[in-house]
Amino acid sequence: MYEKYVKILKDHTLKVTSPRLEILKYLDLHHTHPNVEEIYSNLKKTHPSLSRTTVYNSLEILKKHRIVQSLTISGSELRYDIQEGLHHHFICTRCGAIFDIAISCPNMDRTLQGGHHVEEVQGYFKGICKKCRTKEKGRNNNG
Ligand SMILES: [Zn+2]
Ligand SMILES: [Zn+2]
Image 1 (tube, rainbow, N blue to C red):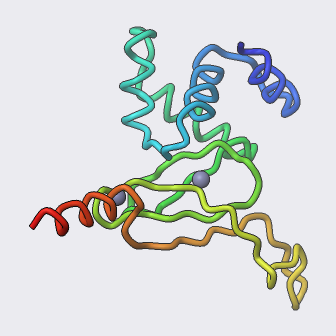
Image 2 (cartoon, rainbow, N blue to C red; image 1 turned 135 degrees about the horizontal axis):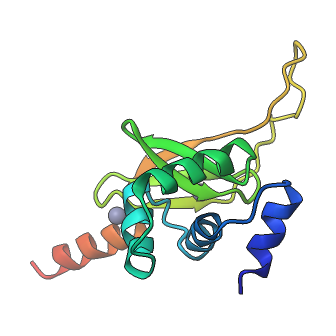
């Protein structure tokens, strides 16, 4: 179960530690772009000795190695995402849910004019998610 995450850490010559594995697993299973608090409180249930600082520091290391990415889509709050190539995000202004959007960027080239080298692209779309729209439609139909 953890082999996949052990491999990721080893590929980046990072020490394999239990918090790192747990965080990777959590992000891999929950594509909801959780913040530190959410990751911490969920992992704490099964790992009572885990500290918030450890979670934060582990995320920073994983980020530095581009294994995870952070988003500042909702205000100044950092949300985390396991790195799965370039993708954009859609944030629902009603419920705050963040979704991955598979979109290709036709104008994006790894080397832009002027010699800049692009390492990541983050596009944000804002609007009302499918779930909230369905809810609203239901409400309108009922009266
Ligand atoms: Zn929504
Ligand atoms: Zn994402």
